Image (cartoon, rainbow, N blue to C red; front, side, top):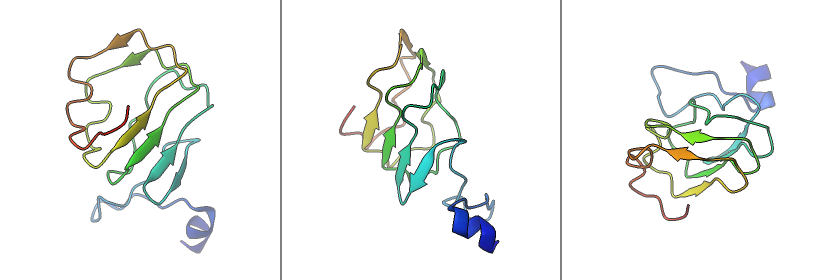
Length: 102
């Protein structure tokens, strides 16, 4: 467990849903998730639910599907610039009730 804490990776704890792993190759600090410049072709799914800022810029994301942000009720900033988005589900942003900046 100490090695995990030192690396900044917190294992998923089903008894505490506010603690979860950071998406693969992304960096998470406090409530900020940084997934920029990774060549991602889709939105990762395993964000910590208390995320307030999500940076997905400079990737190759082509589609924003329904449910992509389903657990991110506290998200207020979503950065998607410099992707290849051509399709967005009409319900994709519905769960983002606190979203202020897109």
